[in-house]
Figure 1 (cartoon, rainbow, N blue to C red):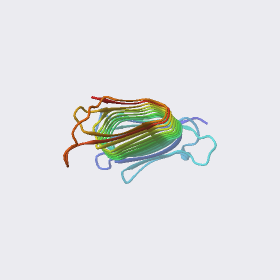
Figure 2 (cartoon, one colour):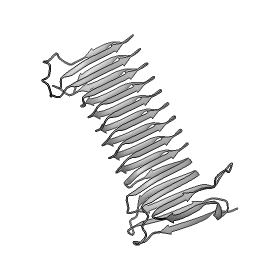
Figure 3 (cartoon, helix red, strand yellow):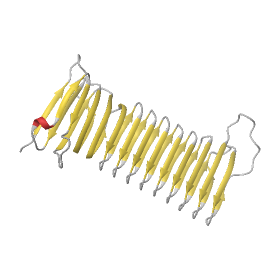
Figure 4 (tube, rainbow, N blue to C red):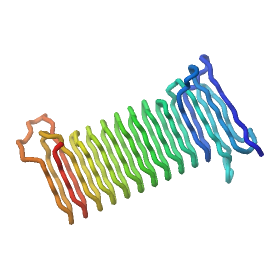
Length: 278
C-alpha cells in the first residue's frame, strides 16, 4: 500500500504552542518558518492506511502518533516550520530529532537516533539508546543519558546531570551544579562555575578551568587533568595508585573566611593526575 502526506497550518486564532510526537522509524525536524507567522507542519508516511497515523491539533498541542502494537510500522517524517518557541515531547524508535530554532522545554527520547538542538529556553530531558546528543545552549536544568552515544553541550545555564554507558561527554561552559558519570569514555569540560562531580570507569577526565567552589574528578583507568585559575586558593586531595602526580600550583596563604577557594579532589587507579595554573 502506498504512502500519504498531511499538512497542518495554524492561524493567529489557534496557534500551535506544544508538540507531542511518538513514532517508530523516521525523523522529526523543527526549523524556522521564513514565510509567515505561526507553525506549518508536514507529515509524510511511506506506507500503510492513513487512519493508522494520528495527526491532529488539540488545545494548542500538535499530536502525531504512529501505529502501536505493530511489528514493523511505516517510516514517518515530521517536518515543522515555526516562528514560535514550542514546548516539545518527542519519542522515536529509530529516528533523528533536530531543532534549528529555540525550544521552550523539551523531553526527547530515541532508541537509535541522534538528537541535535540549537537552544532550549527551559528544562531539557534527553535519552538515547545508541545515538549522540549535541546541544548548543540550554538555559534550564538538563538531564541526559545515552547507552552508547556521546553527549556534547556547549553552554549550560543551570544544573547538569549527564550519563553514558560507553560514550564521551563534552561540556563547554557549565554555570550550574554538574554531575557526569561515564562507564567507558572521556569527560572534557572547558569551564566549571559551580560544584561538580565527574566520574569515568575507563577514560580520561579533563577540566580546563575549574572556576567553582569544588571539583571532584575520578577515573579507574585514565588520566585526570585540572586547570586552576591563577591566584585561586585551592585545597588539594589527590591520589593515584600506579600513576604520577604533578601539581604546578604554589603554596599560598589560607584564604580569609568568605573568600573564594576551590576544593579539588582527584582520584585514579592507573593514571596520572595533573593540576596546572591557567
